[in-house]
Image (cartoon, rainbow, N blue to C red; front, top):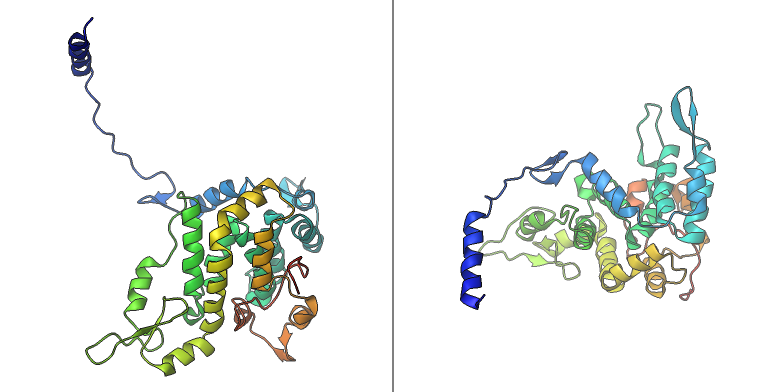
Length: 321
């Protein structure tokens, strides 16, 4: 059969079997216009994080038993905390790091059964440890429960919410883009403190460090940097952009493989202050005080003025002192 005859035959077959019309699909169950519900998002994130190895200590801490038809943990909260901390410190287990947040917040449960922020400054470094290793569950918890304060919006760490939202979405497109793109457009047009906008006689100035927030004057910038702790947030963003963003995928892949030595991770941990000696923050752990004064734990979540964390996690590192 010649070439032209083959082409004619292919056309006949195609005409007999026309391409079916496109099927219009609806958003999957548990989503709104393709955006996952909270339950659906939790399931997705849990599935994604399942690739990380689980330490024996974490598995033991999660062991359950059936009592009167209900499932209960075999160990109490304190025993679980001891085990998962071992899993986090000895093996870099991100599941243990996330559960450190759970156990610490259980300690701060009120009589009404609600979680209060009494120990959130102690749980934060463990979530950050998990986040820099690529745990999406840790990232989502940081964004939703630590950096976003619905009760006191002026505490929102918008710059860090934007950073981690982009990291999560870029790493896995199944996750919604939680970066503050729309909000950033609005922020860029208004002073973050007094909400003044650009006019013919007033030109807002962007923060040089993050290029995210704008100010109408040095007075508003000073208020934002000192009273709202943008100085620390901005400095931490610089650390993350330099020491985490370029190596995020490599660090995550190494953590999934269970590598014991990850030089880029250790350098990042050192730069963030996660490896600081325990005596630097012992008072915050033992008494919830700083320089002898009672603290609001929310003030000790984001960063100190140099961008490092207030409370460390594992006070040891091969990268300097």
